[in-house]
Image (cartoon, rainbow, N blue to C red; front, side, top):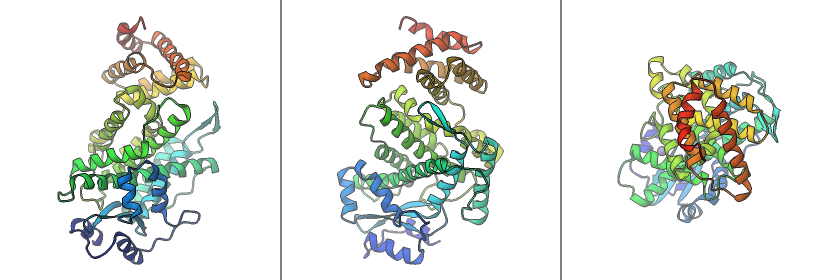
Length: 412
Ligand SMILES: [Zn+2]
């Protein structure tokens, strides 16, 4: 295949990155959907630009790094080296297509909250959504392109949310590719791309999109970062699904199945190894988790499923807990409701994970001191009090587990 030849072969010579992209665009013209920016790659770059280091944005302004979209129906993105210091980032039209179709269903299955109330109830059930997403995967594997699914109910509001989420996922794709360029710039281009490079490109990419220089506790900022992080994980999930179906990407290396777990470690590191900040950052991503994992399970070979599903981890358990506490603290739900929902969630989690989650939650609420803006300190204290109340009222066997871990912090 021609694409694979590009990637495995030596860098192209006697051509500029832009010429390389233009030449390939002639062969694979991209018909952009109505309403979409004609140069989609450049549009994504313009949204990312402010977060990039000067040395990287210089490459783009000097046309040494160019991003372009080709009309090829597979969901691939990669970077081709051109000459000594040139890069052509290629995004296939199948990638945004795939991401968008799945994102739409995710948001059809989401309740949308605003100012303490639900403004949009989910229009598609969980079962229906799993069914539709799985069929997108199966159809793609059969036909080699993404079919359009529109036989389910979705509102204008949900479509907008889905589209924003898709854009954030694609921004991460571009950020990951720029992450490779950044590695080449630092380490040279002699070595072939390794698995570690992929993880490092993820790390750079996440760093570029998140820009965690501000406090995560500022409300608007936190909200924005949560959505950005969710977009990135959402993309990794889409790839994981394709990987389970045996789709071979036009990348130099197969993607590791443990990429999501590694990715979460990276995110924790970027959040200063502060569990509280990581959990605050990842709540929306964790909310997508259940549905996307069910999809993975459905599409993958059953014998393999245990190996790849990240599952009900301690982090996700704490995330669920912390979201309910936050909603409670904002007065969106009653403490009894929160308690009920926590118990119904814990039922599915094994004892060892609950034990880990209890310790994790104690670290979050009692060890890691609040370091956000002073105006939010009262809210953080209020969340802590609600958590204490929950520990005291959790039914057995959960109550005992949480109280044991709580003992050293009783005086706090
Ligand atoms: Zn890569």
